Length: 80
Image (cartoon, rainbow, N blue to C red; front, side, top):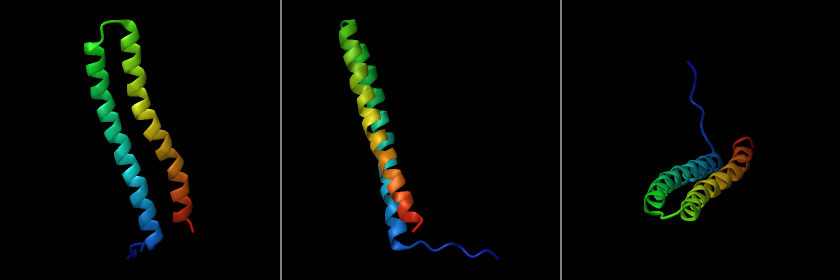
């Protein structure tokens, strides 16, 4: 019978950090989608539509890049 692996406290912290970052990223994507919908619906011209799209993209890209930057740091903690 295979015995389950026991995680060290550092590994648990790393897993929680990565999971929290991904949850924030997914939440930001949902908020950005709603913001894009509202922004495109309420915009009166192409420049305002472009601004709404840019803000929505930034709301997703910034948390995603942060999460992808944190993930390798936590993987290093897992492998110690």
